[in-house]
Length: 408
Image (cartoon, rainbow, N blue to C red; front, side, top):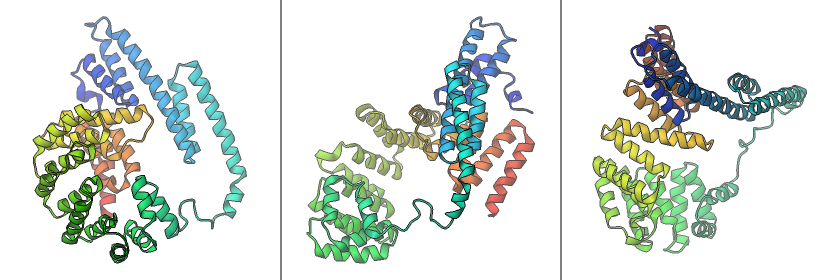
């Protein structure tokens, strides 16, 4: 049984709605397929006199949007060095579009790619001569350079303080961020003795202890730090991480309830509260908290993801799906990369809701490249979809893929 036969009893309006949903989240290829199927159904079902015009317009928009999406993806492929893949996408885009300006731009891109390919062949000998040169980014970075890079991501106050703590602190902080936790403990402990009792060093030492699962020592340091810096959001974050790791989430929630009023309603503290509620099984309270945050603090992406997780815990799968879809739509709208976690949750929930569509297959296939560590899971899901479609050949093919990766 083919994919379309699964839905043989549906009318064109249902395919149109599916197409609308795919279009809204930027899955223009899937939208195009649904609108084409709706057109086919509408030809045999004249109940809605406006549907032919409506579907024609929507199909045109999906084709043009897909063409533009192909062009953008082709540019990314070209930047990564895949000129052949870029040319294939541009050719597909050229077939889809009816816009003369876009057609001209795509043809220009194709010509530019052919010229670049010629230049690449000319310079191949020079590239062979440089085989022994390490790729950009793989050179060993010395501790001082790495320390400066790490501090660049910190707030001004903390960055200035860290630069003033001396060489011992620099060595300990670098060791911590490189995963050498025993060395980090030794160097940061010494650095604490060399610096003021009001320094930020206890938080970094607590983080090293936390990674070594020495929770009591980490907690004592954080408590001491918060006595000196009661308004430190960073301090409360480390406190919660420590109590969560020690499987004491109730204590984390209680401590957050009594944190100073000046920071109690800030987004980071509210997120820590929500996470503590979820970890204690208070999913309804977390759900209410995140809804209130969206109302009072704006539709922040992290809050939307947290609300979606609370929805899943409460069995509100349709609301979770809509929330993940909202993030995907926003990301595509600004040309940003979609977090593989969001993409996977959207796909997994779709399968749970028996949405065995081509769009869901496409999501899993893209995740195979983006997150190779989870390939077995993605292959299994694609197998499940093809099995539901009745396509035993493809189901068996992906089952073999998943078994191969499981064996590896």
